[in-house]
Length: 288
Image 1 (cartoon, rainbow, N blue to C red):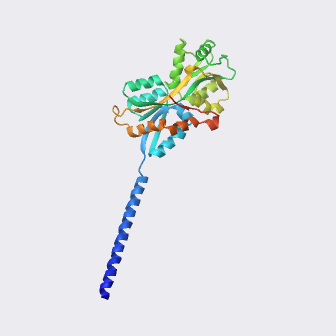
Image 2: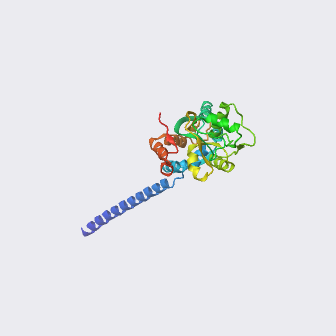
Image 3: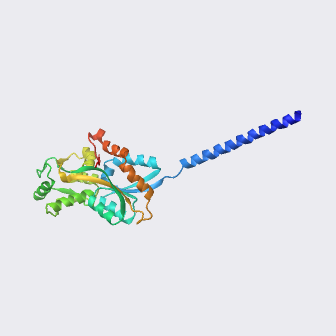
């Protein structure tokens, strides 16, 4: 009888031991699985955008939020809007954030871009030398351009087919002037670099307000001379490169990025960006 009790006790102990081992193995397996999930490599999303979103510092705030929420590493290529749109036509980017509405619409019509949505806006302004040799002021951008041309004051252009450059060329066309000569200085560079050149050359330049505010402290020779005109609104859109036409693009994360940019949480971040440092928003959320 004693022997039977001993065997029964031994059997129970063995069952408990096996159960413990099973739980340990399960816990270890769960732990390994969790670690595997934690170590999952982030996917890569290529964002082609304008230099203004980069130079203003807005992307430095927004992208870390998107990357953390979606386990994505965003590779940003900041160029002129024209170049960004061209990357879209070639399938060299996954998603675009740009500000040349007419050219954007052409990309959608061609089928190279889809899911285009309005994100935000600010405005264009004309800045110039503090001594203002052309004497321009007020809201009338067309009259300002005419006067600058007539007095042959220095005018700095990005010359890079960017959204700002396209806007500038549209104004020259509206006043029937083809700018040329030594006083029309083309930089072929982004907004921040072009503002620095205007500051050095004592020239006028069309810029978006966000980059101006972000760079103003370093532009000691310049000030705003024309602003507030109804034709100076600067609207930004986000869109996906069409995966049906360009099958190598990361369409899943591109769609997530579009939805992220127009979400109410992101829109609030956009509108608050810059207020603390500059006393005003650099961009405004776009409400219908």
